[in-house]
Each structure stands twice: as C-alpha cells, then as structure tokens.
Image (cartoon, rainbow, N blue to C red; front, side):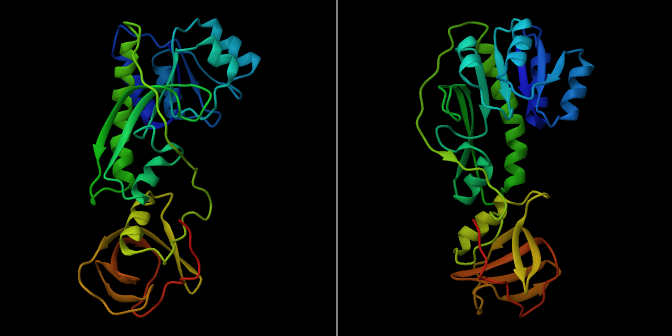
Length: 288
C-alpha cells in the first residue's frame, strides 16, 4: 500500500500496519509542511518517503505508479484527489475521517460536535471520491460524549480510534470485495480567525459547549475586558443563581471566577488573563 498522512493518528496507524506481516507499506507521502515524527518513523523502518507539492500532477502520479500500489490509504492528508488519480485507483483509495459520516464532513469536526452539543462522535473509514468526505462508508464506530469531555479529550480518543479502525479497514482488502454503503450529509466549514470570539448572546449551555470545543492550548475561546484579551479553556455550568448582568464577573476565587450569562452562570476554571470582581466582559464582540 501507499500511505499518505500527518499527525499522531497517522503515526499510530502506521505502527499498526507495520506490526502486521500481512501488510506492506511501500511508501509514505507527507504533507508539504512535514510531520517530522512521521518522517522519522518512516526512516526507522526504511520506508521510502517523500513530499508531493501537488498529488495530482504528472510527476507525483508517475512516482506513485512506480511503486505499483494496490491500495492508497489516507490519514489526515490535506490534498484533494482529482479525476486522474481517482480513475487510476478506483475503489482503491480510502480515508479515515473523525466523524460519524455522513454528518460532520470537512474540517474541525471535533470542535463542531461539541459546539452543537452532540452526545456522541464517530470515526469513519470511507472510499475517496470527488467530493469532500462523501465516498461510500466501509467501517464506522461511535463514541459517547459527556459533559466531562472537551476538544482535548475527544482528540486523544480519536487519535487511537482512527488508527484502529483504519487498520481494520485495510485488512478487509486482503479478502475482496470490500463491502460499503452510500451516505448523505453536510460539510463542516473550517474554523478561521475570529471564530474563537465568544458571543455573549448565547445561552449558558451554548457558551459551555463553545468554550470546551476550543480548549486546546493553541486555541482557547477569546473574550475581552476593556479591550484586554482573556482566553477561556474550561468552564462549569452552575445551578446556583447569581445576580448580575450578562458578562459580569460576580465571584473570584483561587478556583476560578463566575460570570453571569443571559440565563444562568458559568464558572471559569481554566483561563489566561487577569480578571477582577465586578468587571465586565465586552459583550459587543462575538463569534461562534
């Protein structure tokens, strides 16, 4: 097989493939912005590895064809496969996607399931076609989401879940034909600059979901007090009633601070920035 990947899930899956003597990884294609750990893993096992700036151009196609792969496997690869490669490897290109397809196609789906207050998320292995995560589904598995979960916990679970399910799907190709079923659904847009801004018009539950969806160290929900940025990473919904205006900080302690919402209050337990009792978050900015 030829393997195209990036990140922890790609490394976990590659190790699963390499542990099975029935499988042979002929080459690894890295993203243009290389995953150096994946590259070192390929080097360790003497697997040819390279970068294709355009997976669909003549040079890349000839390089892939030189290995005569009977299967192309994608895990977090960031290029779209176009007509020629799809035709050349029809029914032989698969991908693992961290959602329960047909729902949450596209990017940043683990953030979106939290923002939308879903009670479960999924992992799907599917054939690649000309659409965005629209190919027929080969295998799928679901996992529950609790209020204790946030983006970091879902991501950690998804890393291993994707690797194991992708490995199981690859094994199916040892005894073809591989069964699959069609799907229909919607695409998640990629979250961009400004999407991290808190919208204080949201209700308590919606704010809780928004904050936990962005709790990774390089993300964080953004709010401002007198124009000064405060990053919010983790919150708790409080049953206790507090009197205050929307965005008003009504309690501060060593355990965090309490801010009023339009229908309740949230306790912020992990955040960056300075807050004071009686101060107000700027409620005229918003995202989501």
